[in-house]
Amino acid sequence: MDKIFVSFQQSGQIQPELHGQFLEHLGTCIDGGIWVGEDSTIANDQGLRHEVVAALERLAPPLVRWPGGCFADTYHWRDGIGPRDKRPATYNANFGTHTIEKNGFGTHEFMALCRRIGAKPWLNVNMLSGTVAEMVEWAEYCNRDEGTALAAERKAHGDATPFAVDYWGIGNESWAGGGNYTPEGYVAEYRKYATAFPGFVKTSMKDWMTVKDPTVLIAVGPDGNKPLERVQWTKRLFKAFADFRQPRLHAIDLHFYNWNIETPQDTVTTFNEADWYRVLAGAMEIESVIHEQYRLIEDGLAEYPVVEGPFAQKHHCDLIIGEWGNWHSLDPNAPSALWQQSTIRDALTTAITLDIFHRNCDKLKAACVAQTVNVLNALILTDGEATILTPSYHVFDLYKVHRNGQRLDCDIQTAPSQAGVPETFGFASEKAGIISVNIIHADMRLAKTIELSFAGHVEFIAAQTLHSDSPLAFNSAENPNRVCPRPAQTPEFDGEKWLIEAPAASVSVYQFRRV
Image (cartoon, rainbow, N blue to C red; front, side, top):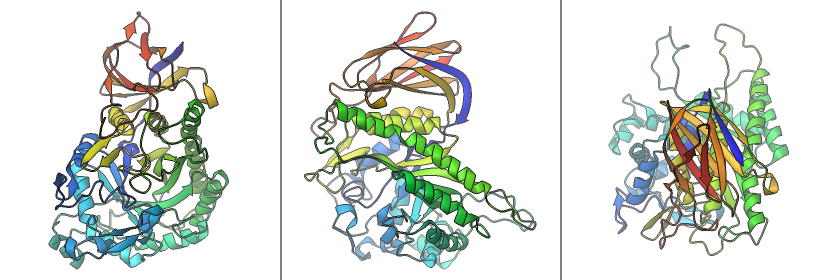
């Protein structure tokens, strides 16, 4: 019998930004997905698909990254402001999208969405085909409160109040389609962008060194799927940053996908037991990547030279994962580019990944799943007028209880299953005296009884479990609730431990109160 022991030892706060989202102009993520336009017959709120917005309001994502991704490498922000009927049409060829981009969803529409759902916006700057001046003007347009020409232009377009955008990504995947830079070449460009980035905090001369600027400038981190390259990228990146005077740098953006494209018989909705465990094992790899990159960042910062003079400051750089999720073999019959269905298998890999983020909250500060709507590891799919919540959406919804909670030490005794995948995963956090315990049961076919015990006395509150009648199960317009959370069986307590019946291929969240 597998055993989980939850200590009351708190070991770090779980940043809400670990549950971030990613919206990019690929396939139908934006056009036809979250954006249908005000003239659409589909129910909408000022052009935003009503049911998608409602689903995101419920999820309340803390952070949303936009406009890309690779789309950001050729996106010029002025194409997406002003009257929509006068915005220029451009062409979007990214990842097989091949459509006319009418730019109906631009800066103001994105900010309206973020305000509706309570998310912090993350804007990604066009380093590849844009300019430093273009970035500065976008930042001024978004954030300047004073009566400049750009602030007046924003006001004329409907938003007198600044957008207060704190997260700014400088470039995207610059090691590949974002420019095929070397680390040294990228840093040379980054220095200009970071130096020119405007400030928006008013301070006096006497306190300007102590007042914290909320701006987060995010440099391009490595391709997490290339073990040799990712180490060299981060090492050389920080060596280049350390050379002479250091520019502002607050985080690097690592990308990591759980690739599943080399086994032809394994499709998103048709796979065997070996495929099941192989993909789950792939999701586990990201933990070692986080440890490796965190160490490389710390080592790189340690090599920074001592700054001469009175203005020396302590350097710090966070690790962010700007894109993550399952990337299955592309379906030639999919309704749009990079569209893929989501099964129970995707729910488990999503849960495994989020628990890795939770467990490493001292090393990882934010993460954005790729992507929110209709693309790759999507939380929401649209089909005509229908809006479908995927199993991965329900995992994010169940896991909201951990945001701002304190991570608890959790000891798990379980035997490895196939491909080195443990049968049982677990994680626990505490917030306001409530302990939330995740239990992921990875066996594809068999249920299992799990012993759950605590360092002190608790009382059971409630539990929900996400599973279905088949590991191949998914939600569709015809059957939208085939995979959704349901109340879990109340666990038995024998005076020392709680006995939990975990269904096959399931994700469960149990909640207890300290007594």
